[in-house]
Image (cartoon, rainbow, N blue to C red; front, side, top):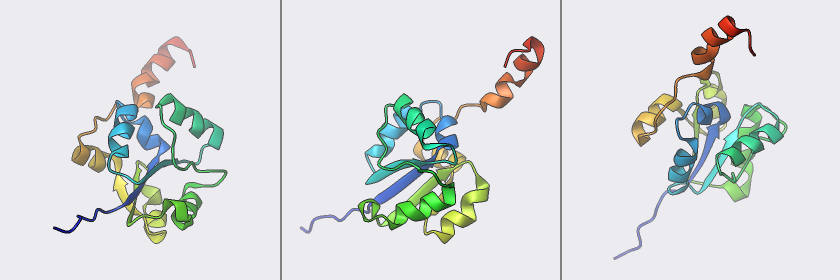
Length: 139
């Protein structure tokens, strides 16, 4: 019997997508079981993204660097150490879809990925706290 070949996957979470998950640390642990390379893309400064990754107990294979998300996707895909059969971006930013697909990434909307994988989504914090801010005056 021949060895079964498996598909290699480089997966990038948009930082805002991770922040919408109820249990980002659990999702990362789950995702690490079936990906070859796992990291984060964001327009936020790298030190903030690195801090969020630490908050999730995660040492990503790649971070965005000082560049916008589309440029990060191109750079990641062109780095031999992140080579894979498939490149997948999980995002909440529909505006990045075209740039991701032009760069050779499969775009997966967070809600669809969460439904497929059984990840639980949190409500958006901005919507939850908006009323509280107006009543109390606290930032």
